[in-house]
Length: 241
Image (cartoon, rainbow, N blue to C red; front, top):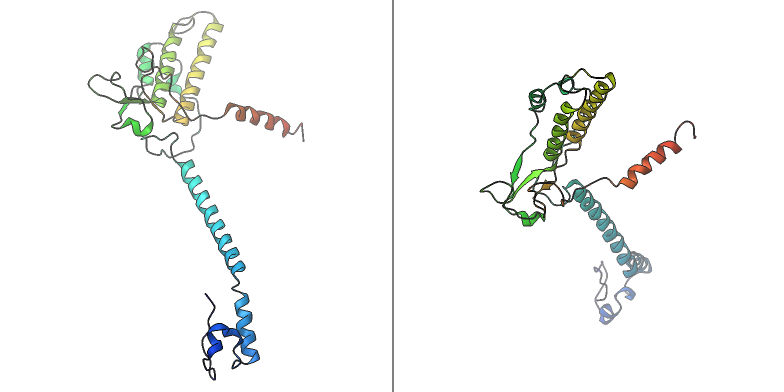
């Protein structure tokens, strides 16, 4: 399609207007130069180059937005809604130490739900294996990993009562110190589990146990990357400027 122009005063259409509109003899040299110069700015190569740059920028923006959106979503796909992050300071918990009976341990853990289950209506949407064995009469029941982890830690806490120096026993000092150390470990790991808040849904595994937690995929830190942090710290320590 040939470019066209608006007639100005003194212009008259003629046979050459359609064929060569920008070489009309009725146009002054100044007017022809202005139109020709303007046409240069809209050269097809320049136009498509500009269009390509705009499309490239738009694609980049969409990619960044999509990447941010994907990173903010639970992984893998999960019916669990997004959980907000908070800053929490780890401190010694007096109610978790110096316990001498199972009843005291049970009371200390009473504030934490360690056997919570959730029902998922359509587990296939989240790549969850269907089940019928977790709770009688209810299909497709799962446990949040954080609750499973707390449950296991609570059982270990109870087990410390049976160690030498536990359950109020007055044995060797080193035995009592060992139990105090284990109590510290339990308290610390409890806070770490709550901090991580692993919201992975666990279903029954292929084995005989209903909920062993095995066979479930979690989103985890890459261990090689964590080991690399230690190397980075050593290389950037004051002793190694």
